[in-house]
Image (cartoon, rainbow, N blue to C red):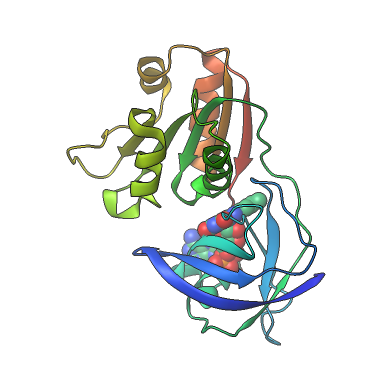
Amino acid sequence: MNHTVNLLMSQFVTHDVKHFIVSKPAGFSIIPGQGVELAINRPDLREQGRPFTPTGLAGDRVLEFTIKAYPDHGGVTQALHQLEPGAELLMSEPFGTISYQGPGVFIAGGAGVTPFLAILRELAGKGELGGQTLIFSNKAPRDVICEAELRHLLGDRCILTCTGAAVAGYEHRRVDRAFLEEKIGDFKQRFYVCGPPPFMEAVNAALADLGANAESLVFER
Ligand SMILES: Cc1cc2nc3c(=O)[nH]c(=O)nc-3n(C[C@H](O)[C@H](O)[C@H](O)COP(=O)(O)OP(=O)(O)OC[C@H]3O[C@@H](n4cnc5c(N)ncnc54)[C@H](O)[C@@H]3O)c2cc1C
C-alpha cells in the first residue's frame, strides 16, 4: 500500500454503517466511483487490505468513506468500526470500479450505493442530476444510507425499496423484471448496478432480459 493516512473522525450514518473521515495524502486524486484498498496499520491487520469506495467529492481536503460493518465476520469492517480518531490506515492508489459514462439509471443494493453516492454528489455539484434515476434496495428503512440526501438530490427519481418491511414511502418489492418495467420506460439508456452477489445476479439477469446494457460492480463481502 502506497499511503499512510489517519482517521480523523467517524460517525454512524445508519445502525451498522459509518462515515470515516480520513486525511488525504498530498497530490492524491480520485475519480468518483473509483475504489481503494484500505488496511488498518496494526501488526495483525496490516496485510488484510479490503476494497472501499471514497464517497466524498474529488476536491475535498479530506477523504470520506462510508463503510458497513459485518460483525459476524470478525473481519476488517468490524475492526474499522472500533477505531478511534488518530488511528493509522494504509491505503492503495485508486483503481477503476464503476465509471460514469453519462445519464442513466443507478441500481444499488445496500452498501453498493457507495460508488453512486460519489458519482451523484459530483453530478449535483455540476448541476447534472437531470435525467438520473436511483433505485436503491435495502431490507428496511433503517438500513438506507444517506436517505435524506438522496431524496433531496433526486426527488421522485430516488426510488427506495425495502424488501423486508412494508412501510409507507418505500416500495416493498425486489428489483426484478416487473419492477424495472414499471419504473423505467427506456431500456436503451445506461444502467449502473452495484451490490452483493445475489442482488447483482438477479438485477443483471432482469436487465439482460429487457435488452439493457449495464456497467456492474459486485460487492463481495
Ligand atoms: C471495489 C469494491 C468497493 C467496495 N466499497 C465498499 C464501500 O465503500 N463500503 C462498504 O461498506 N463496502 C464496500 N465494499 C465491500 C467491502 O469490501 C466488504 O464488505 C469488506 O471487504 C468485508 O470485509 P471484512 O473483513 O469485514 O469481511 P470479509 O473479508 O468478508 O470476511 C472476514 C472473515 O469472515 C469470514 N466470513 C465471510 N463471510 C462470512 C459470513 N457471512 N459469516 C461469517 N463469517 C464470514 C471470512 O471467511 C473471513 O475470514 C466494496 C467491495 C468492492 C469489491
